[in-house]
Length: 539
Image 1 (cartoon, helix red, strand yellow):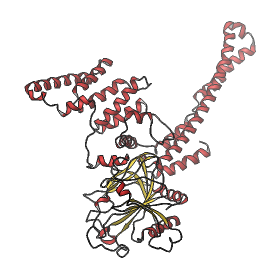
Image 2: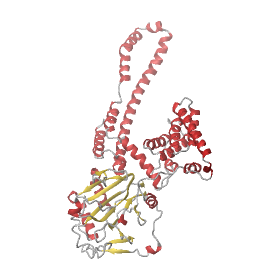
Image 3: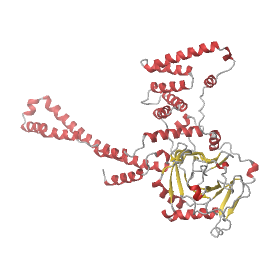
Image 4: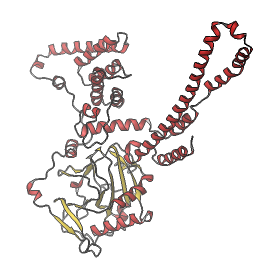
């Protein structure tokens, strides 16, 4: 490998080393994979050039020998009558053909294979591929995108359009199937079959697609369609044992169902849920653990925002000097009301582009999968409802961190002495954090006695997002969209110290773009006189 390629390779290894897999959870770190793949392509092209040079030499030798042997074979004795020809024949067979053999056996793959073997250790894993597939499904559900839209790459704000092949759609369906998610199995296997029927060239057979699709449809209780798909499979492969066995099983179930219907004449009066679903030609998305799922996802799409004209009249813009903070008197911040109750405000030009890049530069090597605290055990763990990577920056990491911390203190009028470190987060494919509270509701949290609860949240948006990625509050129907350089602020606790349950919020999945944020959680201790108690529990 050339020295400059080795340097580039080790740089890639250094960057990728810190990711600890789970590439799909951070777009910022996935960019390292682009450079790793570029290095592999350059290595591959060097191998191709070496092979082409080798083949060119072999071809030239073969053409020369073809002309020579055509002449010699037409009159062997006459040809060998010349002593030079006789000598050259002996020499060719003893020496030249041996050199050709060595040329043919020359291994030009060693450099490329060595590079590939080393870098493969840092490639995304099966877990990454599964996570990426589930991320696409999450985007599909949240933003109500059909498989055709995703497959054709018709997404808003995209600069580089891409397509999903039959094999890609089949892979999505298999991921869902292996997870017991028959809803998405049906959607993606149908898309794979559709593109196959349209004549797309693929190594995946219709038999494979129909095998998965028919069983997934059966899981929804749609016996008629399961039989139809199975019969189509058998027409393509009459020796498929499982399909034949399934068809006989489906026929028995259908016959049993008919007999039960005949016994129960009242079935004519009303359709069962399954029959209604089958007649509509669609399968419903199963309910899950999140009670406000529909509200949350609607807000992510910009639907159901309860910004009425009456409420709009109560929102204002102003210059904010931090209650006449000396540092802000000459250069106050622009403050805009985002919501009236609970009061949420947005500040503009809080961080410069240079500060943002520096913060990202400091955070990127330390990014690790964001965790949540198990509500039963209190132990930190990863969860599917929080897909991002985060790192924590201390003031002594760089003067910029101290400067940003000081600025947040000046704006809020709260002390950073008891606040948590600056958390920097980067969201990956379909990156999200489902509805949650920032304040603790667990009495066993060790920090509650020493530092108090999380009093307030200061959230910096460090990037624009082309589509998706809003911060939403399902309880009162607010949606805040990322704007680079701005920050939003709200109190998580009432003045009494009681939790404000209205502040349950979520970070919507990023549909298109790369979302970077940083946040500071201010705690109760040290702020007793900066934000005094109210007279009632809900002041």
